[in-house]
Length: 123
Image 1 (tube, rainbow, N blue to C red):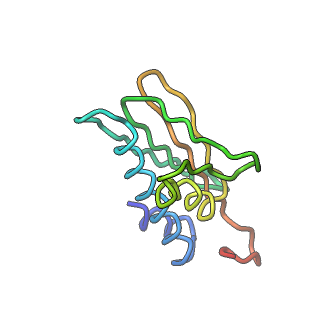
Image 2: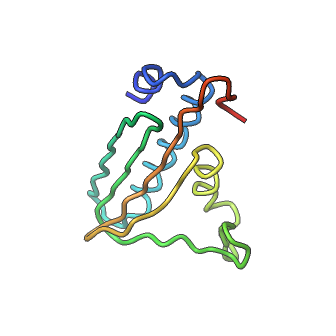
Image 3: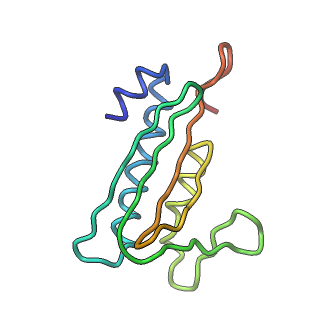
């Protein structure tokens, strides 16, 4: 679905790959962090004139990313240095990434803006 939506919106292949990678990472995290054996994950795509909004919502335990003293850095407790890079990856791939607490779960909202004519889509 992402490829078709991205193509229809005029995103280039590189940007579509960024969106797909962020979506896969978000879904994996939603399943892993729900702490419920038969958790459901819902994905919603909202197409706007200037952006694509992806909403990934799970059922289960609330998820709170832990931030280090430097704003935006994810803190990795001892023994977890190899884990926890998913949020940082999503932030690198998407223009906006935010978490919203929901009753009985968490919603992740990711946004990728369309670039104006003449602007480079990917950095």
